[in-house]
Length: 121
Image (cartoon, rainbow, N blue to C red):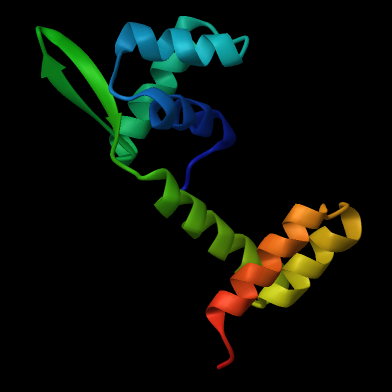
């Protein structure tokens, strides 16, 4: 599912605090951006059409919930990045980040732990 950067801001607000009423969702997104209500409403409608979010009625009001889990979205985005830029290979991706950003001792230890957990194949 293709989620734009703008739509991601709406999704992120839901992932943090769902379910949210329309008013709450608009307020959350506006607190993170300079957008007006109409822009946020447009993004909500786009996400509803895409099936990324869903609405339900509760106590006479619409509440919005993410239909797309953050973990599933992150996995799909990661795989797309990996395939498009690194031919599906993980090592060049990690090397690229490691060369451009300083890895803390904690980062290096976490990477070692992940590799050890995966074991030798």
